[in-house]
Length: 317
Image (cartoon, rainbow, N blue to C red; front, side, top):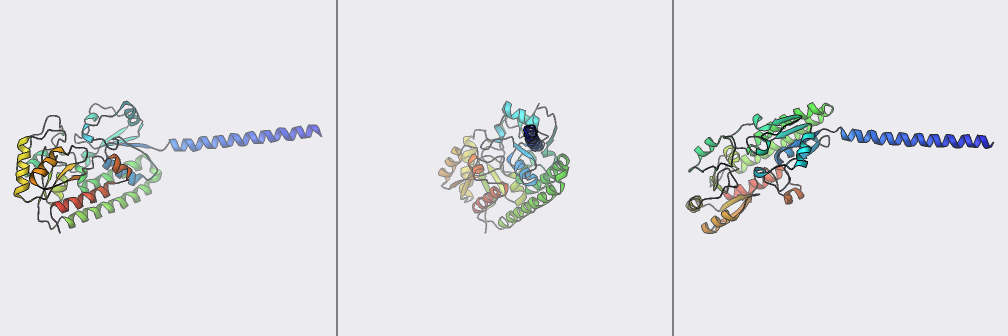
């Protein structure tokens, strides 16, 4: 009888051990499934926003540019470089926006998104302005304006590229990516319609900014941009340009001048004070501030905020 009880006890221990082993293996398998989630690194907020909307929770997204950091002057840390190297896919803005990309070795696929969109050349922009700006040597943009994400048609082109690339690295989610991409494109079309409608009847035709990140918007919706320091946000504004802008503001009855996020507002506040007009901030969306990130603002929301400010400055009906 005692031997029988001992056998039962041993069997219970064996069954318990087997159950623990199975549970442990299941946990390992679940962890392994989590680890096989593809990793995609994005260099700017606009690219990250597209990726987030298309991928759902099926891809681990790495936002290379920390929130609150200016895209023009960013340099990745060694820790971030290691994370980029681990990614299955890197998608970067291109057009000279990320100087740190030069000489960077990509172990896996890397895509320069600027090669798939319509770019404005700096010569085209300067020819449309009433006066030329001197572009300092530190502003290396390969002869093109890198802020192409502010043209909504370019953002739609980006969604097509991302959808196809995500399908390649996670084909099991093909239908999800197609559905999500179409939903996002529909939202972009609605945003485009809002800009066309709001900016179609305006008394003014020019906005004043401290650095010209908004030529794609101006080109698409038919207004002009006068800037204090051309394309380089780091360039020191000259007294000559400040005097010209003050004169322009007064002569054309402009009500508001703008500075951009991540750029000092000192010069534009001086111009506004001298000209007796308002000063406000526009968001060029190369990145968003830490405060905007905490509020969970996305590309569409910020673009609509910009639209309201631009339409007021242009005195649109």
